[in-house]
Image (tube, rainbow, N blue to C red; front, side, top):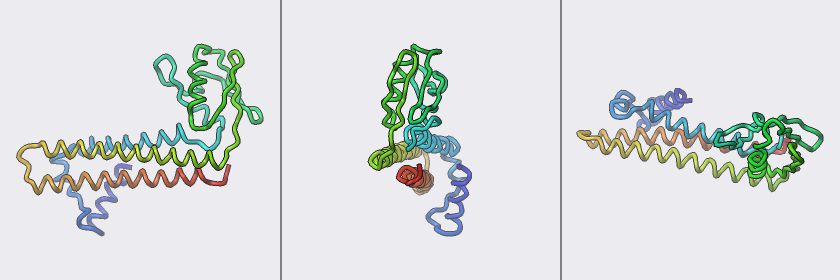
Length: 211
């Protein structure tokens, strides 16, 4: 993704808008561009993970298998702690191998975005698969928007910290500082645009008719 973003930025600068041009040689003399890109990439990666882990229309075996469970101070996927099988309209978890994890598993199942209502019987947990309603889809879509806003906030935080660091550097000409700030803004907006595209795709998926 990084190389694509940089290439698009250069194309825009050279072919479309002069104000969008980035002089990367100049940019790299003042800013650790690779580090900046890595921090922006991380913001997008967190958004992607939030979408995968917390927003699923279907309460499928696959979605439940990947649920994150906090157990003994560490993060596990549900499939690492339980044997998972499926019956008509019911998912069955055999937790006999790690019975001490049952309270944490129940907590994870109850608090995710799939509106699950787990029932425990000894070391077995039964999870009825709820019907997906229009209201539930709309709620998931709103949650997707919240994750997107958080991602944009993270991008702005990276941007603001980097601009502050540039302004604190000594002996930089004012016009150079201005240009570097512009370069940082260009990259930041590219990443927020990428996040917006991901949001639009996810919301279409969540609000779609297919099951």
